[in-house]
Length: 172
Ligand SMILES: Cc1cc2nc3c(=O)[nH]c(=O)nc-3n(C[C@H](O)[C@H](O)[C@H](O)COP(=O)(O)O)c2cc1C
Image (cartoon, rainbow, N blue to C red):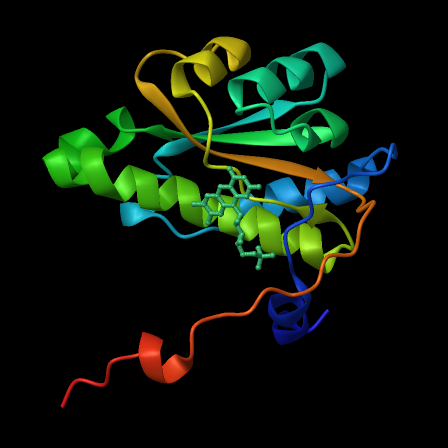
């Protein structure tokens, strides 16, 4: 699909059908993640794939009772892995680059899912410690984004945006 069609058509979905994500589509999403750019190509993040119903239910609780986390058949958890950056980039790597790496990877997953006819919503409101326990991630990894993926059970309207003239500042 044309990239601009994907960008223009994507929207958050907060209700999911009881329908599995086909393995070939999941594979393409994971491969898209792995094409995301990262500082120095260090890929200072980890991705956890949650599909068991029990763990998704636990994510609902850790995610401020956002029920769609339990509805979507798959939830990807993106964690920073600062240790992969710190020797080369010091505090800037540990405090900034690894967050950018992880969130760009999440963006790639979101757009790939959309191109494949799947829906997502970026979830940032959650208890990091509780999520870390659910996915059994080590302490040096920080969960920064959850991405439920599945087939939409709703068709929300596209949300409006700020005007470009308000958002973009030309520097003379
Ligand atoms: C950093 C970040 C955190 C977000 N956290 C949540 C969240 O916890 N729950 C939720 O329902 N949506 C969340 N969203 C989705 C936004 O609400 C949504 O992207 C925004 O309203 C624009 O709507 P659209 O995605 O349909 O264009 C988050 C988005 C971002 C980028």
